[in-house]
Length: 212
Image (cartoon, rainbow, N blue to C red; front, side, top):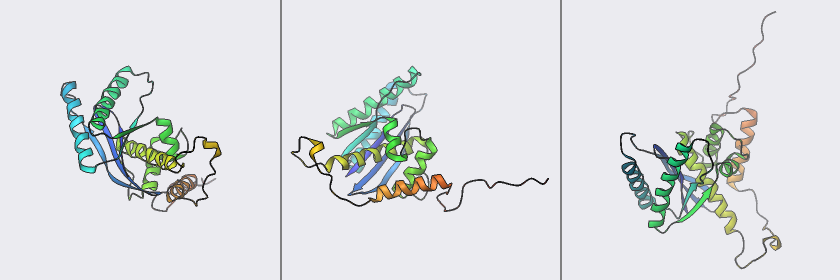
């Protein structure tokens, strides 16, 4: 299953494609779609629609995950995100794709383990979960990958529930081992606590003694 994650915006829209095979996740492609401020809004939205359509037709995702619109004090930003979201939803609907939404808080919890994670921490966790050689950049692309990871693991959890069971509380969870995804999250959190970078060396600045 391939999930296309989208971090919407009109000036810069992040995208990230993640493939889930059982418990394993891998990055297929990620980047950003940018539009010039010199273009009229309709032309910018058309450019986004065409670019997202190209991604869908190239990678054939099963699901499109989009960041859910949330209240913001910046009305201009809210409008821009909403317009870009609408174009993405239209492109997905035109290709009969399922759509999943996730709030920024849900995405942070799914990747970094808590909703107050900073952007850099989310980037490092995405790198660890997907086994990337480098942290994904820019932020918009990393956020899109994080959305795809969130949706991929949410879908996996749902698929574990036996069909026909009406009361989830009556279902006995199957005994399973720790998945590669869970191992990656735990290891990344451990490295974060110890201040260990991706290269295996400590990222903390050593304390220096001052001469008396």
